[in-house]
Amino acid sequence: MLEKNLRKDAEIRRQVILEKAAALFAEYGVEHVSMRQIAREAGVGQGTLYRSYNNKGELCWDLIGESCIQNYDRIQSFLGEHTSSPIKDRLETVLLYHLESLETHSPVLAAIQANSGGDEQQNVPFYSEHYESIHSVIVQLLNEVAKNTENLALDAVFTSDAIMAILRPDVYIFQRQHRGYSPEEIKNKLFHVFIEPLFHK
Image (tube, rainbow, N blue to C red; front, side, top):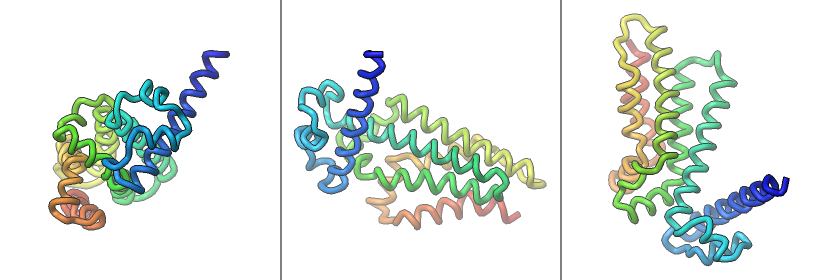
């Protein structure tokens, strides 16, 4: 029982740290927030914070990981509640949820990318798992489109790979910061290239 309570306390502390860190990042920018500030806002000692995270980068990845879990749960909840909705609506909503998650955490993602050269995300297990989870959902939906559409030659896995390539955090950040596209423009272009052709045969 004691060990269970300790784990529960540790998880509650972790959630408070992530919540306070996210609020500070949103207000001041990731690069302008120190671990000392995060510890103070979360009401924990710096030693406690550093026992959980060696540096701010690790904390950022944990924050993104938590977002990935919430995003996937949101997608699964939507699909479970809308099994009879048109396939186009379900497919677009899944992509929209993922885009919204990217936009919400783009400042943290950009900071991580700037400090890691953009390659670190490929070596983070939860990122790979999340990629595969979303990829699998898109494949299932595309297979449903192919099954219900005559004369549609569709490689669901390849198309999902192409969609997820556009939804990589580094690509999304590049489109927002360097191409100057708004979130709405990215969404519309994504739908125009990958979704609309499937339903206008």
